[in-house]
Length: 386
Image (cartoon, rainbow, N blue to C red):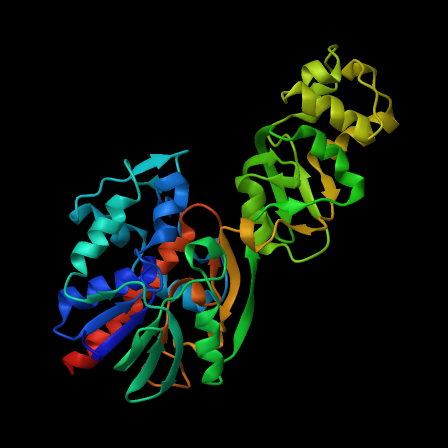
């Protein structure tokens, strides 16, 4: 086993593999990927129901929580089209679902296989737990299998969600050892729990339909799912990224013309284009009788407006164990957006989810992982060209 390298990449997930693939193909540097799990890219493999939502039809910085300059720079260097072309050249033909999500047609293994194939020139040190990083020029990476040295270290260790897949906050620990500011990890893309006032929603577990949620200035639309613990589904997961505390506003029927509905002679529960089970429980929750729409008085009409502007304050979220990703990471102002290198420590880079950039649900986080990896690998290649 070699102990000395030009580049050590810590973590063999989406960002780490992409970084290794780029460097292995385009340089003669001695590179190793250090991964604590016995297999690479476990989170990538499990994502999207095993079919990996690679990216989205609409990708820009507006779909991310994080520094706009950092995100914009990465997406400019390696945009959605470049990502699709990259995997297309490797033989992958992504399919579009719901007119916006790019998925692997068969399984996530298609993406993993391409990345592993292109990074074949790098050593893959699996089952090697990272304990610490110290020094500089060379860096010393201490693991449970010994100490490795490198001229440059790329931290691609991901976030703290999915602990069963080996996730940890080792990336933040490494940054903190060098005096680099970090933002603690917290759950994101996660279901939201309920205050007692909204416990009526627990009766609706399993029901799902399209809805719109407003969180601050963000307006998100997708399916909402009622769960035993609270509310979930794609629209709630994306909304959770922007919710810290206070109220959110839910439109349970975004395409409904409420004024037209009020002229109907049918009962509310029949006229509303929603699951009847939801409608009946919702009407009970706002103390509104299920009666013909055209017989509602002014006070009852005011109550019904809540259908499209229901305000609620979640009590919290489902926690890290249920979160798709994490908010937080190495603070954006600590990283050079042109290189992904630490501004304080030359030769130390941070990419992917361990950086304080998080995308909405829908392929944005993999896009960020791949884009930030290409920014980093390109910067390193340029150093060795000059």
